[in-house]
Length: 435
Ligand code: ACO
Image 1 (tube, rainbow, N blue to C red):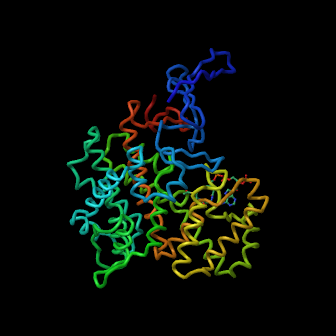
Image 2 (cartoon, helix red, strand yellow; image 1 turned 60 degrees about the horizontal axis):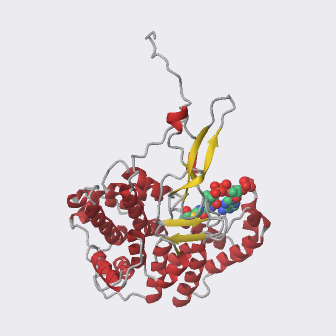
Image 3 (cartoon, rainbow, N blue to C red; image 1 turned 90 degrees about the horizontal axis):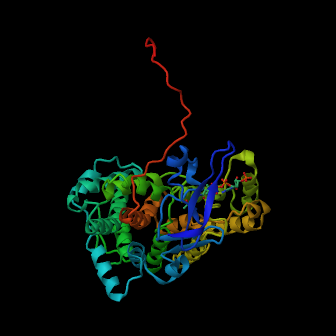
């Protein structure tokens, strides 16, 4: 970061001396006021619940401009990456800062492919769960349990260990998600197969059985690969901040990523695509397209408590660039699978059409987000709704681990320790004790 010529001055109404703070510029985006010395100079903290105005770190991985509807990994627009690269290329980019050349791509693909198997003992660990356990409960446990298997790579001060852990996590996540799914179905686990792509291998581990060969459908593979690319990183969102905070204590990477999985599980974060699909299914069940206008009136009525799921975003106040790409993929998958007349897709298009013309949504700058179409795509592929967030976790693992690694490589890195505004009881004595 670069020091700006500008300075910020904080003045107080009680006549105490104003204080100056340095201002830093990034490559692009809002400048930041460096308030690190605020407490030592004034005895005051800042108050910012939800981090609405707080940059918690410096990062060179992902850039979002919510007003412009821009998302970039390492400077490259998401649309260019999604249209021209595979998920593993994007993983390489996110982890290393540059796109791979042919040799680097080959080596990286080989490296990840040869780390996809999990320790056989994990199968027994998984069998301790009830079969009807939520996949995110299973995944949180499995990812955390990885730390019990890889003592050889958990020295977080060693960059090589950090790299090995990153590869292990990216490589093993599809295996773990597929195992959680197979277990819920009562089907045998399918071992990874190295002649398939990252995404093709995941599809086979999900939908293959030992009874017959599984042939990967190219369109489905491309669609899922795109879902992975679109979810790979999203700067300092709740789960990424969780991974950073958890990892800042010096814990091992598997424990930090397990914390991220737990955070992502929440409906305000990774659970929204499940909620969006359910909303579309409910409208369909109540009469389909003819009911859309009535449903939209409910959404606009503040007393109804109904929100249009898959619409609006804390950061994007313009069309979420991922939603456009997802809509395109949705059409491609439905066509390829002979589902041209999929009623939910038609319904989604109609909801979007009405919303984009309605002053309620226009004035509030509410546009479809990535979750609006991703549920329809996953449903068409055959992924059960309760697994959607686990798919998101699989894709986000590379972002989490890259951000964790970036934090540990930062000379300004400190354990995360927010402060508070205390509003509880003042000092008092327990009954029977005089102060
Ligand atoms: N439907 C109806 N009205 C909405 C919606 C919506 N989906 N989203 C926002 N609004 C309205 C609010 O009621 C509010 O109106 P008001 O100004 O008249 O009070 C205004 O738009 C601003 O909304 P906020 O909730 O203040 O915006 P915030 O940035 O805090 O919320 C959020 C963002 C949580 C994503 C919200 O838009 C929402 O709940 N959307 C639906 C859930 C969803 O799709 N989440 C996925 C996010 S993407 C992701 O996590 C991968």
